[in-house]
Image 1 (cartoon, rainbow, N blue to C red):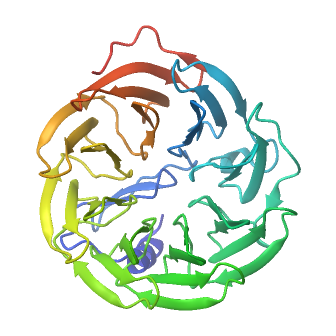
Image 2 (spheres, one colour):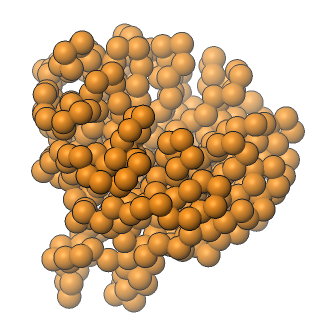
Image 3 (cartoon, rainbow, N blue to C red):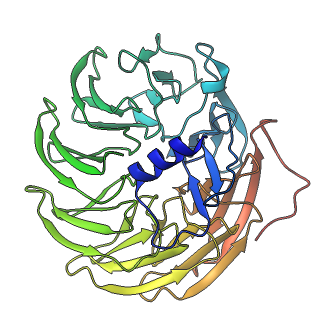
Length: 391
């Protein structure tokens, strides 16, 4: 990446408050470590990994090999996998979580296609749908609601498809790439764009209800609590907006880094993960900070709430289980590999992908104690029996 492109990208995304070492982690798409005035290194091929979705004790997820796999969530046994056969191999990756509608799994590829797979055997249901005229890369994935599938694209547009005949119902264009997974709620679509704006559209026809401008690119998938939309931006600010009007209710400026992962919410608090390595527990009603939990690396994936705990991973290779009320660290699991994916929640267990191309399944005991149950090697489609348990 040349200096001109770096300057352009920095302008789009916004800037850190303190830039000594600039690290852009684009969800495994591109990773650069840039020292001002120095050189940048990068990863040429995308290495996507979605957090996955669980139904009937089966985990469906994308891997760093550019596949969608189904594995038994209890035993970790392989069931099936799907690998796209069209397009260039260098564009085969999946970032957004699969969406299950009836007997079909819908997933959008980095290659710019929308795929519909049988959830029973992973077979391709019909020819994949190209997203947009130029079929640009897809990062944020798909969402479904009220008979409509939504896909945001790097071409700057979000597309609404009829679930019955796969026809394109509407298209809404923004000023830059869309890397957030959209949120559907009460007839509206909520999402952010790298053009620094957050949008609310009418789900049925894609018309604009309102937009809100921030100071940086928006990659964070939004959350909603009551009638409040919650999301972070690459300007280092976490926002709360009225869902109907788009009016700002409050903003939290206490973080020292950008926001990437989707925030988790309880009845009273939103838990925002930041690239500064902290989880912030913020009162939804007031925007006041209740507590923060610190790690030794950026938090890129989304946390989950599990009973009285909040569970999250970090680039420092540790999985943490902390109290929802106080943020006090209760238990941790030293995985030993970067934890950059969001966590999928099953019955009594959680699942996440690791940077060494494996998937780990961890039981969560009543006291919050994590206990590894299996480690699945995606390249071999098998359990790693020789691996010592991380916890």
